[in-house]
Each structure stands twice: as C-alpha cells, then as structure tokens.
Amino acid sequence: MTAPVLVPRNSPAGVVATWAFGAVVAIAIGLFVPIGDRFGWLAVGAGASLLVGFALDLRLGRPDGFIFRVAASTVGAVAVMGLISVTFALAAIAPA
Image 1: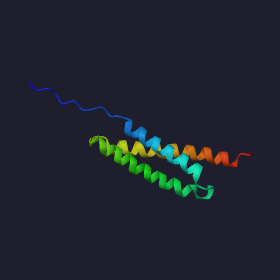
Image 2: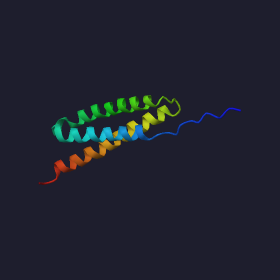
Image 3: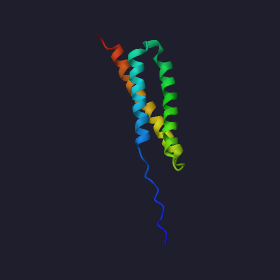
Image 4: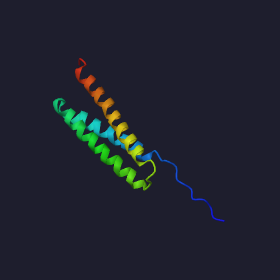
C-alpha cells in the first residue's frame, strides 16, 4: 500500500511579501519623488509589484491557484500603494 501524496498548503508568504514590497515602493516614492511626478512612478511601482508577485509565485512551483495568487498579490500591493499615496496626498495639502 502506498501513502497518498500530500499537497502543500497555500502559503501566504508570497502574497504578503508582494504587499510589503508595494508598501516600501510607495513610501520611497512618497519621500523621494516630487509631487507632480508621483502618479507616473506609482504606475511603475505597480508594474514592479506585478513582476515581484509573479516571480515569488513561480518560486513555489505549484500550478494550482497560480493566477489567483498572482492576482491577490498584485491587487493587494496596488491597494496598499494607493492607501499610502492617499496618506502622502493628505499630508501634502494639510496646513503646516
């Protein structure tokens, strides 16, 4: 009798790492990029988050749920970047 092959659980580490990457990119953009150029750089950061999420999920080597994991990684990173950029925008218009 052979033992059944156990399928590893879905690890959220790749998703969370992509979200953290998005947060770091958004904070760097908010600190180092002039206000007028931030929107374009946020698009570049979102594209970089897509590539990071893609690479981290490819590292797992499991085809089941790949599209869902990449989508969750990317959408979450873009949402985190959006929240951080709104925070920087509100800080920019607040009186000193």
